[in-house]
Image 1 (tube, one colour):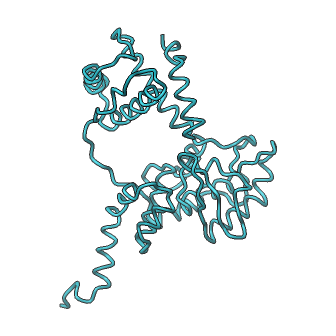
Image 2 (cartoon, one colour):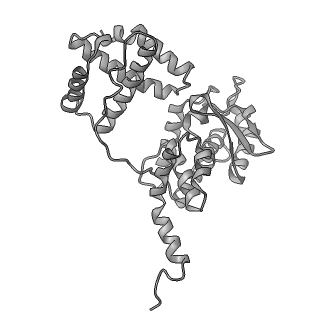
Length: 304
C-alpha cells in the first residue's frame, strides 16, 4: 500500500512542481513527501477519499497526530504546511474544488530564538580543518562561506565556480523561488577560496565538475553531505552543542546586528523577502545592546 501511495500521480506531480518550478531543495522535497505520504496512508486506513476531505476529517487527523503519534506542535505545524501546499496545488490543477487546509491553523507554538555561535566558538571551528589536505581546504571554505555570507545550505551546494567573481569578492547565488542575489565576502573567506581553487579543488575534481563543493569521489557535495561534514567538525572541538548550516547563517545575522548593521541591510544580505523574517534576530541582540548602552552612555551608571 505504501508503494502505491508514493506513486500517487498527484503526489508525484506535486513533488516535480516543487523541484522544477519552485526550486525547493531535495531535503525540503523529501520532508514534504514523507508528510504527505503519512497523511495519505491515514486517510486510506480511514477509507476516505483525499479529493473529498472536509474540515471535520482534518480535525480528526490532527487529533491522531497529537494523541496517537505523539507529535509535538512543531511537527504538526510542519505537516499542516505541507498539506496546505499540496491541496493548494490540487485546487490550482482543478483536481479538487477548494483547499480544505486553507483555513486550518496549527497548534500555537513558542517562537524559538535562533541559535548561534559566539566569536570564540567560531574560531575553534575554523581551526579544525587541515589546510594542507584537499578535503580540509574544502571544509574550511564551507565554514567560511556559510558564516561570511549567510547563505542557505541549498544555495551553498548550488554554487558553481563560474558564479564567483574573485576581483570583486562576490558570488552569484540562486535562492528561494529561483531568485538570484549577490553576496560578498571578506579577507578570510577570500583566502580560503584561493587555497581551495588552486589546490584542493583541482585534486578533487576528477570528474570535471562545474560546482564548487565536491565530495571525496569527485561528485557534487549534497546538502546531507554538508550536514555530515559539520557534525564531524564539531566533534573535534570542545563545544558542547549541535551544529547545522543554519546556525552559521544565524551567527552571520546576529553578529552583523551586534556590530551595528541596520536591519534592512541584514534582510537584503540574507535574501529574506519580508523584514518580519529578519526581525527575530533583534531579540537575540538585546543583551548586546544593553552591554553597549551601559558601557557607552555616560549616565547609564552612577559612580560610587
